[in-house]
Image 1 (cartoon, rainbow, N blue to C red):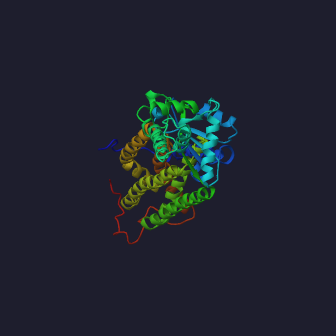
Image 2: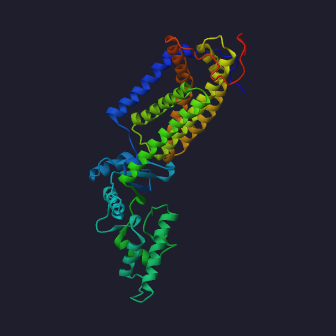
Image 3: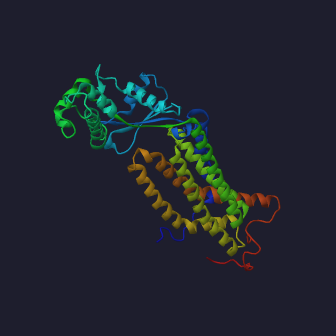
Length: 407
């Protein structure tokens, strides 16, 4: 299947337009990283506390952020995640302690910030542990079990059943403390006792996670090394497979793609997490693969069209691979676009990096990598050296005829 046949687009003739396009987006990203938003690292890299909150209604992230700031928690990030119908938000705090106390501290601070409409003198059943419920019931003894040996395990089991029902059946948020709500897990006497000391808020904290500053620093180092190793491996491979200038051109192209992708995150002030790094490494391989396809066709045509200028050979090679590029890149782009639109907040950064990267990676294989080869040949010609429009290696095959061969 082909979209285009016998195209003759002068891509190299438009190289200055491509250069301006790349410079605009690259410089904008660099300025944002240097002076505006910096590189917005996620909690994975900077360290901090992640608090997952489930709401009984559709949450308003801006209102939640305002409540958190009024409570004195600065630089908190609030975003929705998961399916919209789940009514869940993720709150990231810059609490960089690694002890068990840090987990409780983050949860308590969020509770204090969000419980602006708390009932005085009562505890929130949606954010109480099974031990808290069991101890209260043991003290009140609504089932009149006395101080016998059966009282403690019985109330412990009831407290655990209520919490399990809240978390597993009601997704973390009870609608009320009533016989209708709790009839499957508690006697009416227990429900009446709970009404005396508990109330239900419109949210529940589902989970709290921490990433220590040392772990975040180590992850940053590993992410940088992984990117550098991949670029170095590409340079070595292409240096042996083609010529070293091909490796340099591919590495510069991938650096261009990565810079624009990271710059887009900085301009939008979206956090770069581990999943985003995984997407960037995926794009390095994807962009490199597309570039190698163009380079391989250039190498074949250099052998066949020895008497033509390299610029003409490069243009012909790009046109010959254009249909394949559109097909493969287009199908991949549609896939990641669907992931970006429907994948939810958890995959938002990952899929956005893929969307930007595939667009830029496909563009750069044509508009950046190929012109670098021509610019290098022009530089060599200016210094009186042998041009590249010759067989790349003396042992690569038999001598080719000097006549112009039609393709």
